[in-house]
Image (cartoon, rainbow, N blue to C red; front, side):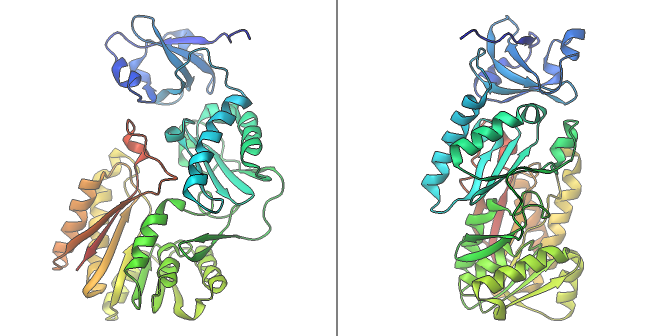
Length: 398
């Protein structure tokens, strides 16, 4: 087979080629020799990356409109990016998930960590929700989809274009059902003995957050006979797991009525609706109101959205995490447990921990740190890319 003819982009002589050779998957625009030809490369096109000595380093997907100019696809500069190439990547990812989980509900592809930069695929039984969050993935979506169906056997593929990263890549926000028909009702997802309802077309992101699975399980292990509060609950992530773990009651708080409706449906499906309640409102306001009402809980978990989605928002985000800890701590009975979570990759775990401890200190609550949790193994960490390790959870005994 004749090797394809690709454009060439080249690192500046002083660029850090060593990091890329050691596995770092991105090439920033300021690391490249740029000329008119380079700048005219189409977003999503492929190019051979060379070092400053003109030695090929691999095949990258390029986007001149993005700060991340190149994303490493294959260390073989002659690789052919076709259905067979995607099938090999997805097959390797599927092998790991099938070893980890008895049922087909998991993150099947976790972007760079699974060798498909910017591609997220969550699996819900015979349906898969794909987020092609980079230009090259959009350009090769047909081959990606065909490989996904070939390897996994899913009958329904939904393309979700709601990711913030797509905007950074200059892509549209049009979501479509690409293969099959969309589920006509929320999909029941069993996890940790609970049942969750995933809205694959109208819900947040892909419909459910699989990443918190092990942290849900840890919270459930603390929750037998406990009164539990789950703040920023989405579809009942921590509260439904706690009820499955034997909690006497659980209150889910969220700003979205639709998410709370799904949480109630999950509680009903699992037969725990009599121990489950919801409260709609701004989480900060509800935490303050519960304090004023004199409410106390054995277990409180706060799992907010990303308060620090980038470095520019870091300081404001850390103050918000501190405020959450300060408001939540008074609601925990002496000897009870507080779980605090962050999905902000810019707030690495040590900074997040300091912010939480500041909040606990301001609330006057001495604490023991019991457990530090991260995303589940279907969200593998790419060691060379800190951004792939975004999720952390801290569990304290107060």
